[in-house]
Image (cartoon, rainbow, N blue to C red; front, side, top):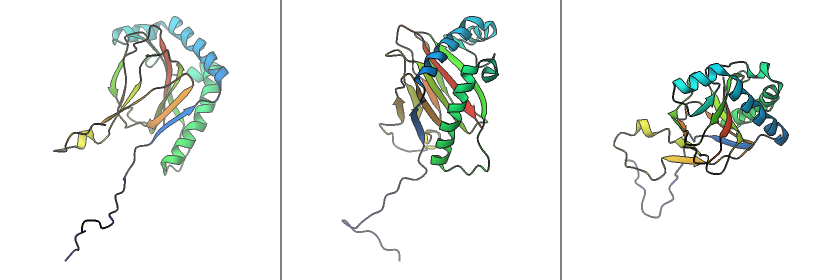
Length: 202
């Protein structure tokens, strides 16, 4: 018969399958300032992106559906990708991915979120690592909200107080996570635009 543990007996409690979240500084403050100008220029010039944002209720501007060649279009974005490659490689190593290849940039886009703007919960299908680098983050402009990935699997599980984690970025922050991790952008309560650049690697 199996032995039952008695009160006071040593018990091992292990955390299995942890969710990794990467938070680092980009490492080039001057480039962050240059990207601020680059993002604002795109928001003013990209008419297709402006139309898409308006038609889809995005409060502000995103190049998500209009431009897929930012590193070729502007050397400032090419410089950014060279730095992101290093961050993503470090994250992949810490996450223990068995890849057999180097992760490469699949898509990258600009987000200019106006006051009151938000982005509802979503994942990034068909990608391995997703992330955001923050360019302009006025105080109160909204945290990144991350959802406990076990939520869809909880059958009769009792509620927990910490099923969401809120991470506050600052200008120059790089956040990375596995693309299946559901997340959302909280409302921009600042009086200025919040500017970020999001991306997928696969």
